[in-house]
Image 1 (tube, rainbow, N blue to C red):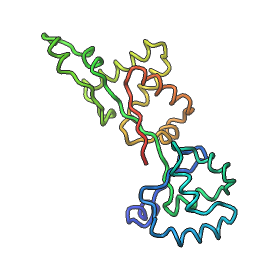
Image 2 (cartoon, one colour):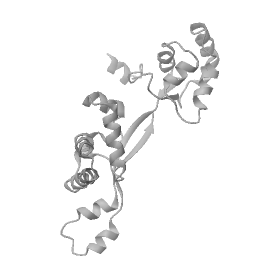
Image 3 (cartoon, rainbow, N blue to C red):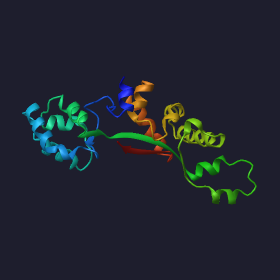
Image 4 (cartoon, helix red, strand yellow):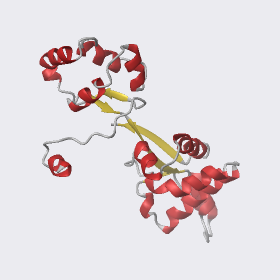
Length: 207
């Protein structure tokens, strides 16, 4: 039923909420309804700051903050976040990953090329859009990145990278990876940091 309502445009899918998540004012927030929604918000959450004040504080922070920061700052009720998400005022800022293949990795994987200098000149950095369906050549690049991470002394991260590479398509959020693979957040973040040292991954944040 939920899928059908979503497909019909009568419902909106919302990822599981967390006080540790980062939420921003939605680019498609219903600004036209701010006046009426402010009255509803005040009636429902009388001890909270006015809705315009809360939204302004969230959007004007120097950098996006976790929800628990605002929760403690304004002593908000736990139900404030679900309300703001349902009404479309907030959206979650999530982290996604892309595999970046540096030029040096490509050159190191070139085999049977007579003019190695020419091949090196023509090689450019690449972003893999679908590592799950990597070609034979792309698979060699991915393997080489993992080897570079391992050579840096972090064999655990190299193994995790090889296992998670299918998720680094820019479409699978960090939270979804953690949920599917049942790993600690620190393990995923440690692996990402290790791969970044060899310039093999790009982090993107969007809603």
